[in-house]
Length: 363
Image (cartoon, rainbow, N blue to C red; front, side):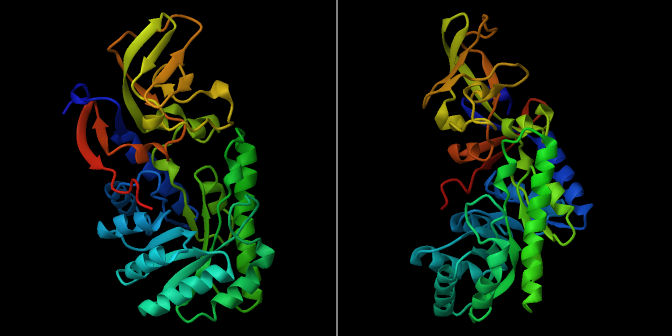
């Protein structure tokens, strides 16, 4: 199949860039003697997860119970659900998964741990858990100084096994300065290692000290004591990563193929990829001038998105006419696959593979 045979909007994955990104991150993390457990929420495609594991990844990370179900049904093993899970329906599903293979989940409260323990007890299984550490993002987790009381409660719960600690330093996004990102990466690694050390001082030994985030993945992995890294976005990269100095445009493997369907003025046009194909996520710094996606191999960024319109406005006439097709590099690659049913793996202008996005809509 040729690109010309595809209707638009269509989600494209450059297979050469994808492979290069997978290998590069694996080598960078492995160089520090740290395990890579990639976050598959970015692509939601079991075939890509298998590719990552074949390259050397030690298991995978998911964001939801539904994503865990999809990945485990596809034969992926050793899955970490990097979010606290509550609610009887999700807990019952989690218990069923725990019978199928290695599985772990996040905990950041005694109340949440008690719910997990009760649900696993009813199912007659034991579940591994990692305690979430807040190193400053103020999303979930406990500060390193408060980890011991939580751990002491968890280790007394017979249907849970404390496996480790983990964190995510979201503040590294939007820095635009490699030196600042490196400082956040070191802070991330040091914070989660501090939690491990506090547990050790209390007589609680753990085996996993896990960090996350594509911008901080390598820098945090370099901190002595870190054992695992969980980046996700790196497989595709995007404009957020480019604008943060994490990668170049040549590393961006994910694009949306779109068609110009209206050109009311020489300097203004509409594409058939709007917010329902690209997401309306802002750029790395949340500024309007960052636009909503870059037309590949140009300097044009989309000025505005409606649901079905990607609108380009420039100061000068734009070199595209009605019927022309372009590829758009999205601001945030982690959101876009969830908006499409399939992704087309492309090499040298030919579609080599069509992947159903099996994890989309799986909560």
